[in-house]
Image (cartoon, rainbow, N blue to C red; front, side, top):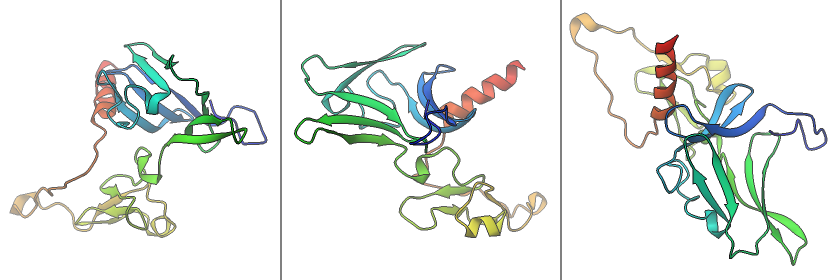
Length: 195
């Protein structure tokens, strides 16, 4: 769990853990809401964290099963590492640099705004390569233009024109290079069936 701030050690809003509903995946929660996910475990690495596989840059070995993740230092390594989560919800792998007598950030997540879950809301997508990062899909406009202009796209986008199913003028939009949170959504869907 993250601290409230760098000067207040009280529990903050972010927690890091393993979600074992469905295939195991590592997650960061903001209070109780999903904030970030590392993808499901495929036997070698988490699908959303290809850079952390089979020994996380030579420091850490992951063993994952249905109920737990065991992170162990690689025995041949004399490197001192630690995981921390800052008050902004960023999980960091820190490496001790003996010559500098200090910690250096080796790796961190989320990398940017678009790594968060649902940063742009419905009917939109997020791209780290543009500013602002949220863009409405074709045929949609921001649901809350004021917030959108303030770089808050959480409300997402709504249709510019209502659906016209009777005249066959509506169509599906082909979108490429879009990450969909299928595993998380499938788990949520399965949970809904039981209630």
